[in-house]
Length: 201
Image (tube, rainbow, N blue to C red; front, side, top):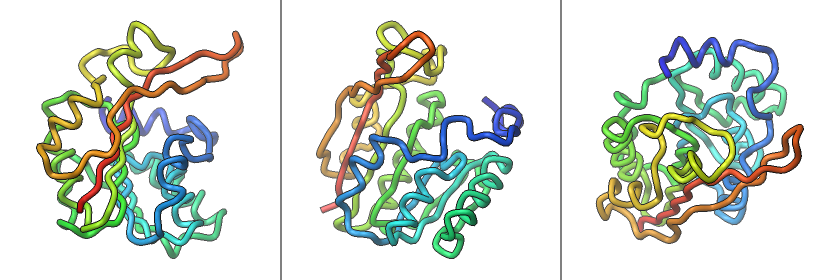
């Protein structure tokens, strides 16, 4: 989707998902020592704000300025504005500082592999020594075996593809499919995501 399309999607007053952080994100980040975090494809800021509430200093990037404005409002409501540097930038061009961040998160960035791979390389290089890389996304298997998510196979991928794109930059701690329960009007459904966690030793 283009920036304009995402801005139209974010234009409503309500959050597209919720103001609550991703359950996978909180499960993986809850036990990390707070430091500097980079949230790539930050959307409406739910994960960045959760980190800031726990003492992290966060740089949050998204190319949809409407989303960033909503994220700023959320940060203000939660009184963590001073802990988050929100930036509007296209990740295809964005160059984070190398070895700077104690946590680099890429949550549900669904773009074609040719565009994704260089973003992942730069994200991995941004991880500081001892720091953590975390990616969660709609898995390719979700198209046929899961619920919801993008229906374009070109923007879906697997944990194995992510690990390959990282090119040995990090020590991989987890790389697998994970199931996410989605409550719908027709009852609970299961979505299939991929999760990759790595560390710079």
